[in-house]
Length: 359
Image (cartoon, rainbow, N blue to C red; front, side, top):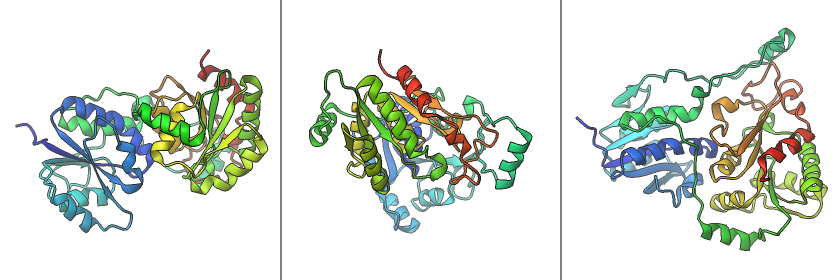
């Protein structure tokens, strides 16, 4: 007997990069269930990400201060017929149990789900290394951990969607941006294209922590090298917490540079990234967004694994990493000398950017 999918609720994830990695599953659900009304339950900070996306019909938001009981009560009023829980948290499953959704699909958490799936075959956990493990690996010269492509988190979300008949064949994550949004951003921030002067974007921040941040001075060095080679203009992206550092980088770079750190909302950021001819970025949410809107991207990885969470399904993305025995450690802060990132030279970025930019 087919499951009742007339009104499907997706309990979305809480971070920008993770949200973008769910889009292949959402696209596959739309493909498999063209008549279903798909509603995304999203943190307020990510609500506008889903504006104009053909695979989401409605967005319901929740605030960080809102209790699980309040969220559940609001959802109950909408009378959803089925739900998929993308996060692995107990709270996310409890919300849908309180909402009394008759079909609730997720991994584990049997108490709150009607269809509790086992862990997907091939899944790899992001295990943080201890400082002692890191030192031991360096002493022993242990080869860096590598995982197979099928361990990527995109496959986890596709696995959940398959419970409702969706294909598990992976797609590149995608976020659509309209021509009107791009034109509005060009006018507001002065991003008009100039013949013979490509527009390059830089995203030096990474909210997760300093173990994902390539040194600022290397960004400046790579940016100046690329400017000499291409006559590009630089646009600096970042959140409110990146403003001070972005100002310093802008001063070090000198003109022509446009500093947009802390000035764009989520949709404006998506449009501005799409306008760029190239984006050089750390492993962070805007990296995933740049790749998903179709920008050409050079992505720098340190403590994390591109095999698990990188934009690996995009032919327009180049990934840069320095192989060391202790990476990936998945730590927010490096307990030693940040060798995974300091081992990446500025001229590597400039050379790789040549392969990511149009001929």
